Figure 1 (spheres, helix red, strand yellow):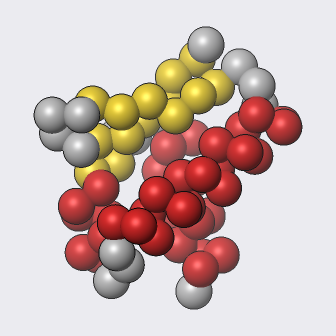
Figure 2 (cartoon, rainbow, N blue to C red):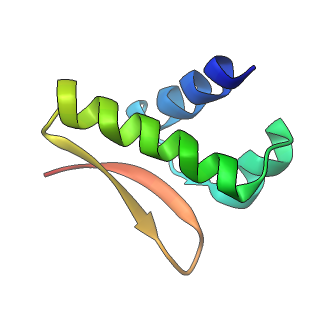
Length: 69
């Protein structure tokens, strides 16, 4: 379940979509803390293998997306 959720989150981000923290947590029955752990895993992967990308956030909306650095 964890790996599947992380991959689904990564797939959404790499596909250019914006991911709502609240919606993702509700859809996959995870806590916000778990969501942030998943983002840390994805961020570490991006730093190691796709360093031209970063995860960015729109604080007002709680929405996350990938951005080229």
